[in-house]
Length: 348
Ligand SMILES: C=CC1=C(C)c2cc3[nH]c(cc4nc(cc5[nH]c(cc1n2)c(C)c5CCC(=O)O)C(CCC(=O)O)=C4C)c(C)c3C=C
Ligand SMILES: [Fe+2]
Ligand SMILES: [Fe+2]
Image (tube, rainbow, N blue to C red; front, side, top):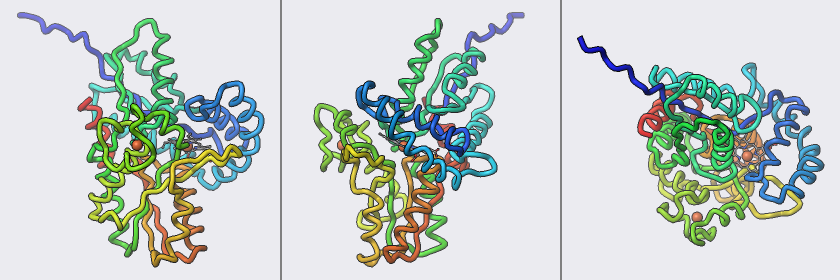
């Protein structure tokens, strides 16, 4: 009887990566996290001779104790939400994909490191690796930084396996679809006059640096999403708003796209506008008193969603005369999102 030839192919390795978070909300751990994050040349694109002394010597020491207080508000029994949601997603995607895949999870900054996650895949002799940075819209400071780190590590291996990256997923229907499911649940509970899609900001300079043959000029260039601005962060944010607005049954005048989390610096370089905190203060005077807010640059709840949008913006809105501000929770490990991630991997 002929014997069945054994396959030479191992499992497919999957690396899910998110940004990173401190090990604890104590100032020392927050300082270590910020030092790693804010000396990344893709985040702070200054010459190393300026970046290191300015950020390690001045910005981080001043910021760490203030950030630590905010992380203390965010911290849960399971630790940082960004971390535990990432681990939950890893487990559920692994269960969904089954034994032909091995799913690992890493963080760009701090723990679990990308190195340790890649090592797990190498130990298991995976056939190839699919890397999914968990950022819907490509930005050099987020997705690009993860890609650079993965390539830096893998390039030192003697045997470099086949490797592919999923660089943006704004147009994957399950991404906006899951946000729409969560948004409709909130809309069924309360009446809203207006919706805000608040994205993490980046310096305008970053958009211009990534502009393909000068196509992106921070103007109407982002009104359509096409091959020239496929990786333009601003264009992807506007496209996310259009898709999400349509999935929620909203007309363009019923929602606003805005940008949050700008790192205030004495350099006063402009970040993507309009700024969410400025926009929301003007709403009550326009008769907008009930606002539903989404944070669609994040697929897991974190400091920027729960605290900044859910608490700080709510307080500002109410102080300006608003009545009801509600944050839609992030995708976290929602079953529709788990299925969407598994599908992105299967189709890669
Ligand atoms: C959505 C993707 C992200 C992009 C793009 C991004 C750019 C970016 N961020 C900073 C500075 C900070 N961001 C901070 C927190 C933070 N940022 C992201 C994601 C993106 N950042 C996430 C998911 C988080 C939350 C992490 C968590 O632990 O919950 C912080 C730290 C918090 C604080 O001290 O305020 C800083 C600082 C810059 C400068 C930048 C682009 C240039
Ligand atoms: Fe950030
Ligand atoms: Fe653009």
